[in-house]
Length: 122
Image 1 (cartoon, one colour):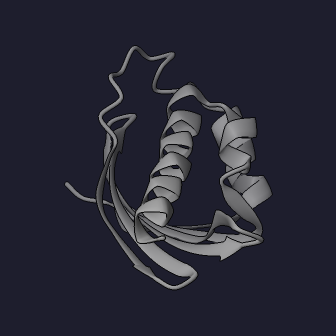
Image 2 (cartoon, rainbow, N blue to C red):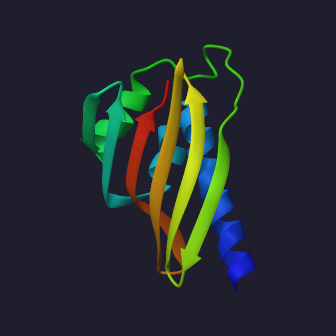
Image 3 (tube, rainbow, N blue to C red):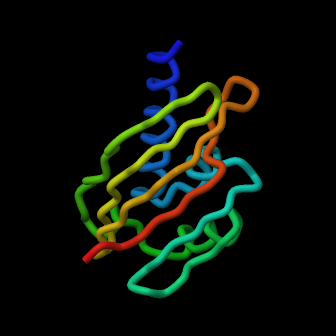
């Protein structure tokens, strides 16, 4: 069961990375629970959005793919306990060096992101 959960979470995170990288809001939205909170610290400026605001921002910016960036996003670690998990990710893109922490929950046998916090590190 553990290996299956890891594989399913890795697939979810791959879709998350591809959604961000390509600006694919349909793929990206499918990764999140509808009540997700997204909080970030970008160079000392607070970022707090709900899923609709977040997706609107992704839709209205140039994607890293459109800017000819390489996809360098990677999983640093995943910790699973029962139906909950945490993932730490490195998400360099658009001139930022982001680190994401995702809280995940297995609902109806499907993993979803229920909380995202991130920061930019110089």
